[in-house]
Amino acid sequence: MPTFADLAARIHATAPRLGAVRLVAVDGPSGAGKSSFAGRLAQAANAPVVHTDDLLNGWEDQFTFWTRLEEQVLGPLRQGCSGRYQRYLWHRGAFGGVPVFVDAAPVVLLEGSSSARSVIRPELSYSIFLDAPADVGWRRVVARDGGDDVAFQQYLERWHAAEQEHFAADQTAAFVDLLVDGAARSFGEEYEEL
Image (tube, rainbow, N blue to C red):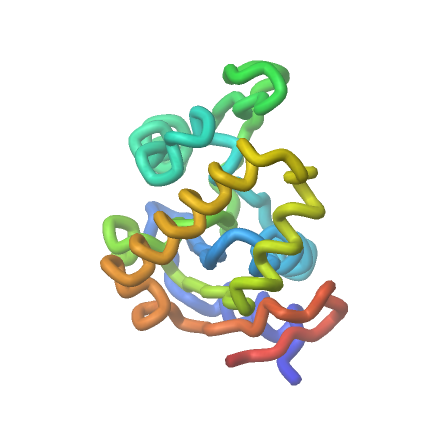
């Protein structure tokens, strides 16, 4: 099975395409294991991770956050400068807290649903799509986010439907460099390709 160390070496061997940065997208539906995978890869590649969920302005900003990401993170990185943003505080319903700085490192990971979208493909040095059965993803999200109430589950149903629509229209999985089986509960030193 492939290892995160091998994948990190493969990524470091690619050409930078976002200025001097090798931007790597870790995409896939919610609950597929993107955050866990990106965390393991970040350790192996010595790379910062930008979580797109931190840039969403609430539930209705599922795909329209990109302008904020471009202005605050991608644009500065492209110019060799550090990006800077504030996380969305879901419990407050507003951006705030300590600013997050993203250095123009040799490798930067962009993790989240729609992170490998067509608009950024020309500037990605590498792209990864994690997939897991819908029921697995659903259970993980409910367990992670405490979704026992009806309102949350309605949001989640709309969220999942919008993800599927986006991935079909964008043809994300057909254009990535690596497809990963996200059904594993956690990632060790290795991962499984699809």
